[in-house]
Image 1 (cartoon, rainbow, N blue to C red):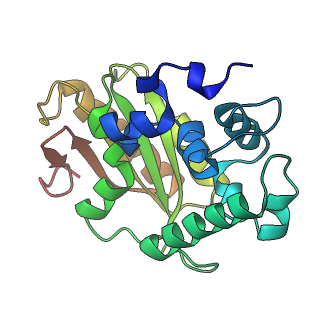
Image 2: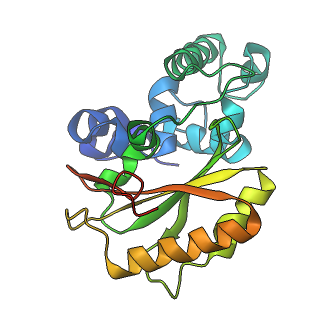
Length: 224
């Protein structure tokens, strides 16, 4: 175990957040900032990693005070900090026990995939919606690497759709080059997935390409 102060200052969670932005921190680094301190035998980063190995981010958002304080290294003060962060996130996203984010427009799609703007490799993300256009699931890395029509298979997308009872999907991927115009492979991939969706009875509502400064919507350009 290394002490946090032994880690180069620029790589410590708080300093990293200030210099690089919260969106560039790993999950354990964000949690470490909330926890502030570790426990005997583990620095705060190691404690955060331990917590996230046991609890997924989605499950962590549902933990109550009693659950949190049972975790070794999380006292009352740390539990209260996490609960306050949970509630703030839920209120900002308007997520209640019976409500889900609704995708009305391309702007809503971008809000769910803004992290892709800074990726240096292409990432294909899939958003899964129910019949009310509520987001029931999103898979952040359906495919990583240069999108190739021979490599991206509809099966990977629609297996998840069936698992989450989705009635439609939205594809999102980034262009690190900065050019948001679709490539020939992008067009072929979209057509193949759309055709597979028709067979499955699952609509492909849009395919959105994003860069640091630009957005291209297949739906808005009437390519779907």
